[in-house]
Image (cartoon, rainbow, N blue to C red; front, top):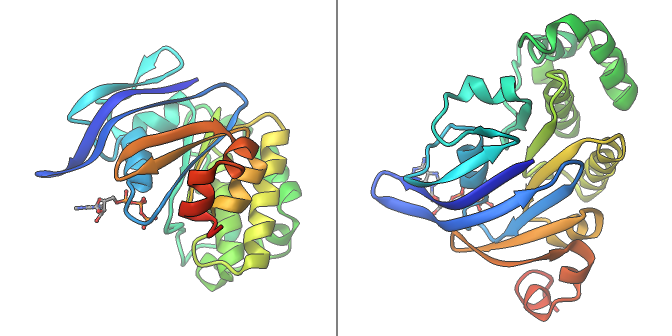
Amino acid sequence: MLRMENVNAGYGDVQVLWDVSFEVKAREFVVLVGANGAGKSTIMKTISSLLHPTSGTIWFEDQRLDHVQPYHIIDVGIAHVPEARQLFPEMTVLENLEMGSLCARAKPHRKESIEWVLDLFPRLRERRKQLAGTLSGGEQQMCAIARGLMSKPKMLLFDEPSLGLSPLLTQEIFRLASKIHGEGMTILMVEQNVKQTLAICDRAYVLENGRIALEGKGRELLENEEVKQAFLGI
Ligand code: ATP
């Protein structure tokens, strides 16, 4: 569904991604793991067209995405749940959700979509009239994911969803990600939380200094000696 081929990218003169190639098949749950600064968010920004590669190609189904405008991404069916959540703090939960369904594909289905995401996140149903800026960290993360789902995406990009959350809430967010995947959603997630994400994903790539160092099934990588030493402290 999504294919990145030999992508090089960076900021000004600083190259961050070096010849990165990977793919996510339809209905797969793929995770990119790596240490701080490995380039995980840069990959997400490149897919979302917030950053254009200096070379290489990005395909989503039969469309090239490497030099399109960011608004085009939502039209092709990709929803990016960004690292910093970026909700509209002065708007209610419901208003934030509505903002997620502005694209032509999603607008006619707004009502059903709201019911769908409020069923998925009962906590948000309780707090639907609350200002997003006053939600707890975990609730804000749920709201950001729900808003992403409101665009009726074919694929969800999760950028470090556990950032700033307690271990318990992190577990809850990962459980919800698995549930959304179970409903047929294709997911690409970047995470520093290696142990938990490798346990729930189908496949994973390990990113080291902007290069793909390893690839495999999540559970196989959990047993990999390099992964154990580098990320699991074993
Ligand atoms: P983390 O887990 O800490 O969020 P990451 O793997 O997501 O890290 P990136 O945010 O992609 O890493 O950053 C990769 C490298 O690019 C880092 O060295 C970072 O300092 C640099 N970088 C990121 N954003 C910019 C920017 N806007 N301008 C210049 N350099 C940047």
